Length: 146
Image (tube, rainbow, N blue to C red; front, side):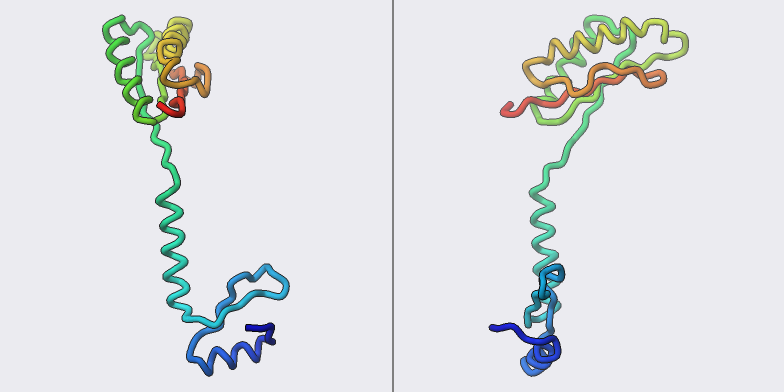
């Protein structure tokens, strides 16, 4: 293999019955290969698919509370939150304020902070409780190695 002009490379490819495929267009001079173009596309798709399958997909699970959620409901939802974090999913915990219950936003914040404290060994808080309209949202990411 050597360095050829484009016209020479094209004629070599035609003689062999293959295509001239540009491998690295940004290189100076551009790198080309004499090969079957369909096979090149197939292998490139295969590589892309393998890379895509190795990429991690982030799963976000949601848990909804009311501002005056009682202890039993809280414990039940906390157990589910633990399970989600152990499975490696991110957790989006939110308090939904219906109607005039927005006046209890301190209770909602206390509830979310209590949840963060209870789940401290399973995950760490990514975003502290923040009020957005009628929702107070908090994100918890699972700890690595769990």
